[in-house]
Image (tube, rainbow, N blue to C red; front, side, top):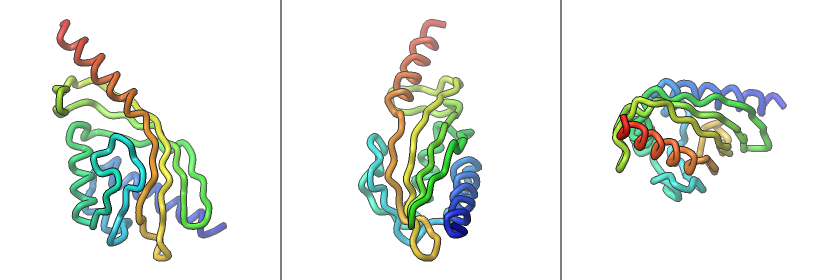
Length: 149
């Protein structure tokens, strides 16, 4: 059980430092030499295996339109070398996305991610589901609202 508790803390620290604070360099403290996005529909990196530099680039590009993004962890569940995390995400749409100029409005999303750890307690990949359709609908709604004002 201690190993699961330690992994939960490690994953919480990773989410806070890398994704919430945007410290892509901190990924080196958590991510293995190779990181595989096993399943993440709608993510441009789905199916790819990234080295550390590739992972850091992914963080920077993913945060570009939403630099204040925050993941609120709702639950962590462990089994062996895997941890499942349910989460709520929110961010302000501050940068342009293809077809969606920045609106300055808040966007929200929910999802769940299973993270995989190696024996050295480094993250080797994830399998994720997220409400990207909901994000698209919010962006579209914001675009319509912005054009009407």
